[in-house]
Image (cartoon, rainbow, N blue to C red):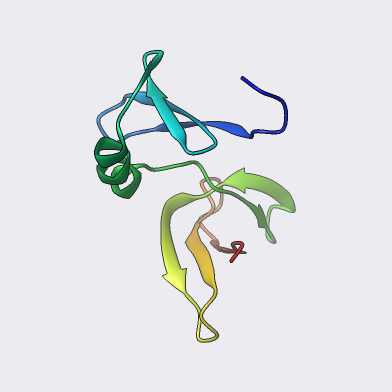
Length: 93
């Protein structure tokens, strides 16, 4: 992998581990095609880390859903796995 390209691991709903590096995606070390990536992208559930105000700690959101705010920006809305308090994280553009 080249320097400067971010890599992330995601888990699909059926339990497959996907490594993303730049615009490429790999399952089991094999690169998957563009059409497969588009289908997979809509199904992927990445762990979203947000700050829980009640626990005063960063936690991975449970039941995280992407929402669009009134100003058009995207955000993730979910619950804290420890205390059940609502969590909200504003995403990049």
